[in-house]
Figure 1 (cartoon, chains in turn red, cyan):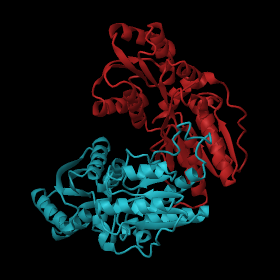
Figure 2 (figure 1 turned 180 degrees about the vertical axis):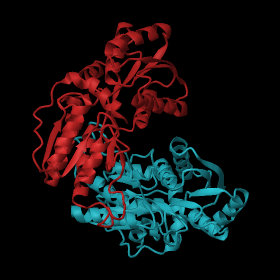
Figure 3 (figure 1 turned 135 degrees about the vertical axis):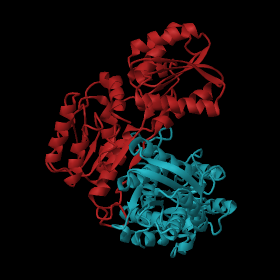
Figure 4 (figure 1 turned 90 degrees about the horizontal axis):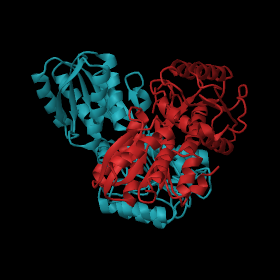
Length: 320
Length: 320
């Protein structure tokens, strides 16, 4: 759940275009979402969730973020937002430890901070909303196993990256426990690059011609794997389950090359993130009003926002 | 997170007395909390949280539960509540799999169900709010390590019970990573009985006279351990960290025999549980209104409601 999650997401969605019209954070008013790269699509759905909660609660929300994917920009943006004394901050961090002092400064100044998508677990933030990657990997395995119950399986992933490791752990453990006749025979390093994923999976398909299923732990990997499977004329014969989505993923799902992808609950992060911030700001958070003196945790510290499985049957709901 | 959690909690709190005046669930109105043993104190704080959220939202809440600690009663009570068509059900289950068909029946009838404290993970419930026991165990270790950084440590626990296993895993892993000079030398089986805990720990203290810290993974164990430490005239010299609390725990904390206990976020379970149920009932749960057709998960599936550390400094806030 380190910054690498968001980085991976970023790499796979940066091509989707700019966020439409995020307003600059206003002085002293309402709640602010702060990201570490303001202009990408990945945060759109989270900010939509925040806006929906804001409308319900009758509070204002604004969106901002660093213009460049640079740590100093991320910290400086957060500093600027703190100086404006907002009602609360919904923050995603580029680096868990580097952002910690600035987060703690906001908390000390009485500004509630909740993190989403990428956490700073050692900071004093009140809560973190993000994807439980092991559970998400298990969900991918559950889907694959419902379509093909025996044979060889390959994984396209980034072997050393923590969120990808957790996705594979969840996937592998689910198969062992519930679908023991599906055997994982190869794991490639796709570097979250679809060209690399295609090339690596082409080699695997040559070495293992009986592969029946593939799990890609990121969207770019899924698109690359789909390419390799098509080129091997195995589409329809090999079930592909991917992770995250972009237009390429949805196109491949509609064409029947990718069977399903596991979509993260980014809307939920924004929606419940704002509801939690607002509960703290309004001191509606525990059985006693002086929770700071009582050292009572004001919010549930970790919220797994879960995943939804996108298939041909529901892909249209995910087109923006 | 099976029914054993709640059972352990029950065993350690059943002596605290009856819940004061839980109203019977009314026909067709509002939200209902359903427990598997209506008359115990343990649910009080959770129901207080539910009431607080109900007041905010302007919706009615009622409390009910089976009179006896019997599986058939638990199921029958849930069936009766479903027949009254409430707006939503906040449920804790005695047995994960036995309650599953009845939970799924409620969901099919359009009644949102959220579980708390003890989950039925394979059912179609929308969310579960409960304690992340590994994280809670790590919190106990963090506290102990802040008070004594080297020496021998003993654990009073129920070795085979899943929630206790998770608490010990979190505790042990935290020490290994952050406090390697604290060495665990003994683990007893206290059967969540304070007399057993006292007897077992007395033996451990004889065999290991240099013990500097003890972690008890349940409240009854903590009270028993405190007894053993007092009888060995080691109070003040051995730091005790317990789990959950009852009057005996708080008394021991105020007397300085138990240093701290880790309290579960039961209020949070009730508060956020109702907020989540109400969001689903009012169809405020995703970026599209037809989330059922789109197969979108309506809520974050798992919420770790966290723990607070009770010490002499804040114990008064926990007296009811």
